[in-house]
Image 1: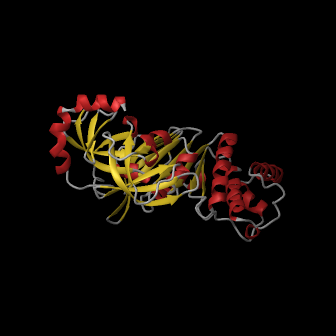
Image 2 (image 1 turned 90 degrees about the horizontal axis):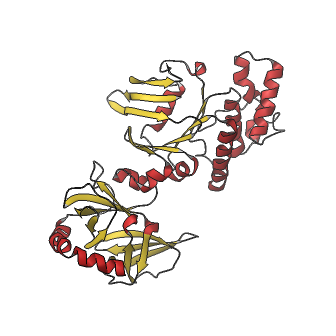
Image 3 (image 1 turned 120 degrees about the vertical axis):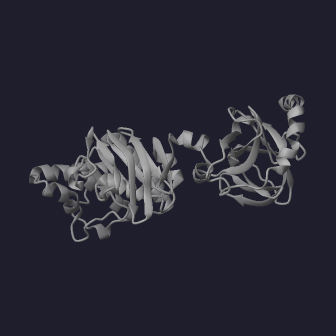
Length: 378
């Protein structure tokens, strides 16, 4: 239904969006996520008709709507600040767009009743926005948008001003609304956990460019570069050498992995999620060895920081280990994700020289068959 084709936008010499192309799945939630200033809100404003791109197209239902006014589009926007009229009642806020369209009083009254029931705020029609909580105001903003029967609902960080518990409750409310309404949601947020929780598709942006598009599972488990790996969830990102297919070396240890297609001894980046590391006795041949520097209790797990040759690894485990202890860190082959080095190499994780790894490549390669058998046995 909605396709973004080669959008570019800037202010003077400052480029905001660079060659953005995205196809939005119909009747799903697509999250556009990225750091502040990455261009995600500008992209949403272009979709809503509040801003014009320098070049590129927005195609909706097969028609070019790039230059169409906001009120002529079947896309409605819920803003971060809600933009409710404080001098109007809740009913008047919800009816505002319908009155402009010249709808009858009976039609408007039915729509107000329907919208308030949908957002679980029946009986609030005669109250004023200032008397509502942040979560209630957010739901009224959504009600005002949905009475216009949009095919696409654009949400610009609508939960950003809410406290943690209310934000989590509203995430599930929005999922419920999407399922009941059967419309397409495009959701802009800088909160990666929110994006993973709510969306069917995630678009990761940085510096005005799309870095990766995929399902939450794909984005989390198969990041394409160091930026995505670091931004979506917690990651340990280290310099590594791809000895050959399915064999990688980092931290002075050679590991089995599931990746292939790299050149022998190619410099790469290895990503290991903190929850995928198993702490074991130090000296284990197929494990890194380090010293615990800090332990943080996170409620359902401990976040443990381990110094391995000057690089601090993050480990998440339900078992307590004391600071100062020396431990091993065992990593299964399917927990290691290998990426080619990119423009973001050096911004995250351990990016020292490769000399130590290269010094051991020939020995590791020569003894790998024997070492692999020992790992299998362990």
